[in-house]
Image (cartoon, rainbow over all chains, first blue to last red; front, top):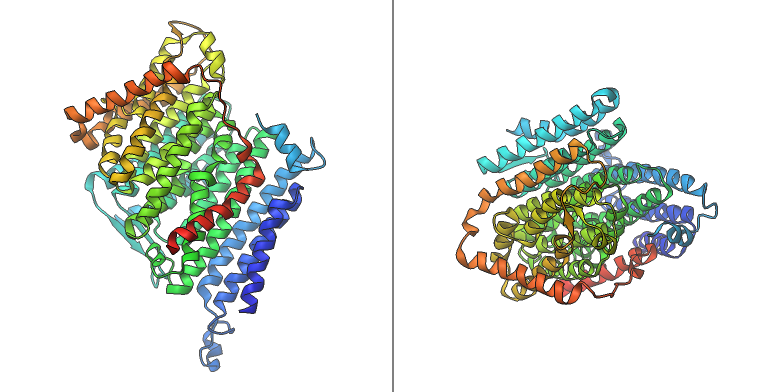
Length: 113
Length: 478
């Protein structure tokens, strides 16, 4: 229960940082914090039944295995999240040439019609 | 048929990788993949069959392809083919076609799946591919628009992921049907993600800027089909679970009103078209049963309209009213505008009648008003001054082929629902359009009112997500 509260707090921290941080790179990192929270939540849910790896050699632990399904799902999500992050950082690098402060308000003002 | 279905899902991705290996054949390979999808969708629609593929020991991971997804897949194939034709003689490099066809493939996958995990992967891939297409010109503005799109959609999808695991926690399965019995916060988070991704209601306010600041072919693709990948799962959930149906309908009506009020007061051609997309998505959600056919007609006409708007000398309606446009272009605008306003002879009419038939009584009056609003918005194009043989921008042959394909299919698609043609429906459609035009000429042509854009700033787009999820939570709780 406590762990659940912590993971959800991580998600919310990331989310509010996306809103309140002005710097584009900080926003991208805040998104990463948020996705870390989501990943932790998946791992937590997977560990409800137990903590052991579901391999037949471990059968001595009375079947207290971690559920492999959420873990495999979040593995996909980690890969996707990190590729999106890489893409966004490349975009931020390109934008940094003309607006070196990377302040989103200023970038937005310049690039809105 | 099962093997064909799997081959069809894999085809665009294989084509995408082939394009990077054989960049000389980029257009041809992309076209083949799009035609493959079109053939598959026609096969599904004509045989009226339904295919269900289950993963062994599946945890709810399933693919269902029936006539509803058939319509969406056909729209996807036709819009992609038209965009490829449009770009055929331009200088676009193989990277563009590769991304385009990967986008096509991920949307196909989104239209085939009925579980939250496959949907997540499909939507994220489509988001990345769409962002790369938006950023293709590599100007500062295009990169910013792409980044903004990527951030908004990725944050929405993170909330969606939390919702998906809550569904799994309740049922040990990821299937759409698992929403029943899942806690209300699961539904609130998942739907908030899908509403944002699909550009619905206030969480869809990222859409006008993104769609209007992209290049013409990319706008056509985004408005024609990409947003429908967020709408399709909502519709599918509404059809599977009766208790979700009223929520989706309410959001549909809200979106239609919001979109059309933006569209009426918009002074910029591409932004007007993007706002109208918002309202048309509302029509799809307002009547989930009829959404397949509606998505087809709207996808075709909206991509045609974006391509036509790209050929105009200016984006500002005021400037366009000063100088006449070419008569051929104007005629095409009239055909497309008639279809989207629901004029008989074009399949937009059949789609509107079918939607109206599936509305609940309380929705009907509102949606009729929205239809008048659509007629007002598109009267702006229809009453532009025109002249034969005015030279505007040089127009390539691919443009005519693409427009021919899209508008031609609009005529042919009438056969889907030809029962719509009776006296009552025809008179009603003409009356709605006449009211809209009169209102335009009398009032809206001169009004200087301009709706503010303050809610489209980046921070507001993210912040509004919390509001929408609270709204959804409240709606499911009651």
